[in-house]
Amino acid sequence: MNTTSCLSPFAVALALACAATPTGASDEPTDPREANAWFAAGRAAVARAHPMIGASPPAKNVILFVGDGMGVATVTAARILEGQRRGELGEGNLLAFERFPHLALSKTYSSNAQVPDSAATMTAIVSGVKTKSGSLGVSEEIAHGDFRSVEKTRVRTLLEEAEARGLATGVVTTTSVTHATPAACYAHSAFRFWEDDSRLPEEAREAGFPDIARQLVEFDEGDGLEVALGGGRQHFRPKGAADPEHDDESGGRLDGRDLTQEWLSRREGAVYVWNREQFEAVDLEQTKHLLGLFEPKDMNWEADRAGDPAGEPSLAEMTALAIDLLARNPKGFFLMVEGGRIDHGHHASNAYRALGDTIALSDAVRVAVEKTRPEQTLIVVTADHSHTLTIAGYPKRGNPILGKVVAINTFTDGKEEISKDALGKPYTTLGYANGPGYTGASESQPEGPHSFGHRPCTGWFPFRCGYEGIEKGRPDLGEVDTEASSYLQESSVPMASETHAGEDVPIYASGPRAGLFHGVKEQNYIYHAIVEALGWTQAGKPSD
Image (cartoon, rainbow, N blue to C red):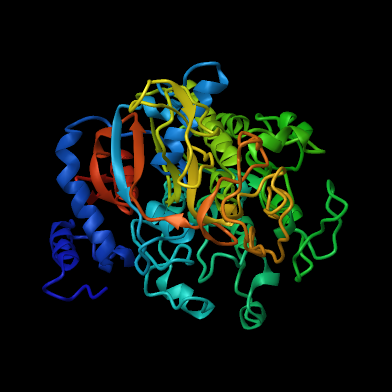
């Protein structure tokens, strides 16, 4: 983006914002984001929104919830499913965050993509600038995949700024703690998948460029993160080191370092846990810095968590413990909580697990509301992007959201009947625009080889699976249990992994200065609104 062009609206915003910046502080270091047009436009947007909050006092704490891939259709379907699991019709239900008083929409495109990825979107949310897809904690001037370009393009994040101001900070996720969304809070990288040194280009490894796991442990802003909970043990332990839980897993690091032990040795009061028993035994009085890595890779979906050998805490339980630990800081705290496996369920065209994890995120939000004071804590719930999930057909009210469409025939006798397509076959309410569900795969469909858990997947990137095609058209779902956990919703376009979608996603907000969240906003506005809510700026201008 050319910030000097007189025809650019972002350049106009930049000029206005810079003109409004307080003077007389030439001896202070300059934030390089001041010259970024996205940053300036976000600051100007917050200045315009300031009348919505008047003279209301700032927030002491902020909890940012991110439902990875949680678009509007996902929220609606999860809302219905939660209600139906309680024996209700479902449509009248509300998830915990849907009760928040303030609502906005976020435009999720990245600086170079109409449909974004989680690295660019989360960078926008926590740093105030949009960037290229695949990049973490850097501006759009980054040379993708070039470690040498990181230092000149790195941008500060909310978590870094909170630490510098003396607040306590934490990240909680159901993915690996090095995955794109949590990593964007503390790391700066030219490629989101550089999670340990084995994934770095050889040149970057030889130059000593820090992988994402190293950046978490070596994070030295303030006194470092107080909480990091999620999965990803393999990225912190040396290659060949046996995993304590799974015999077929081991560490992945080539440098021989055990970062879990370095976490313990770097800071006073540091604790490392990897199973439920240890998690439940954490002594808050003695713990100042908590690292919890409950799986070698991502944590289990909520639907599978109970079967974990060593036991995993739920997202709500991790959120509760994080708040208890962080709230001890009298200056306040910033906590990011991600329902990360919502996204993975969608990529697999498995709505059962995606919606289950959305409900788990709602449970975590409910806990956060209960454990905090509304006059002190701003809670923001949003998504980084959407997915191609659709809710379609004309199902009757109360029809199982994971089931086949049963409609009321309003053209004839008004009776309920299974809806059928033009070929005379039933279909489900939920579907995807693309993905592995193109085969209509299920345990009962022999033509569909890609039922959940039985896909011929290879490689370290999740859901990079083979596709074999179909020969007989749509399957007959008449005898198929589409509500089963293994069922993959049908997709229109065959793909090994379902893709993200590009429509706007919701922002729900409650607490001090939550009125800043209204209307349709650029995604990087979220950062600026949170900073304003914390009182770090005044009507979009930096405060002392």
